[in-house]
Length: 89
Image (cartoon, rainbow, N blue to C red):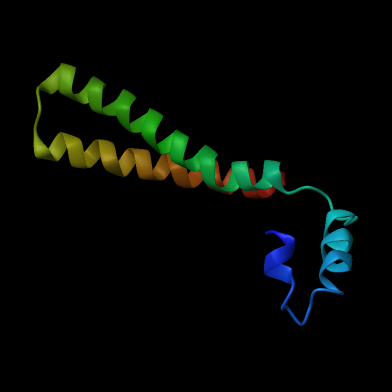
């Protein structure tokens, strides 16, 4: 934003103090919790499905039943991973 945008704003005097207060918050950073909550389960799902899918495909050839079974196992692994992450935090 430029000063020109703030010229006609009714909150132009209190705006700077609000951003200063937000910038000096005493809360702990949540970046690691966000990564653990969202990124790790997604990566777990992708990696485990690619490993299981390739194992099932190489052993039995491609079949919808094998793909579905790999998906079920992958979902279970992802749920266990998410549960462990929640318990460890």
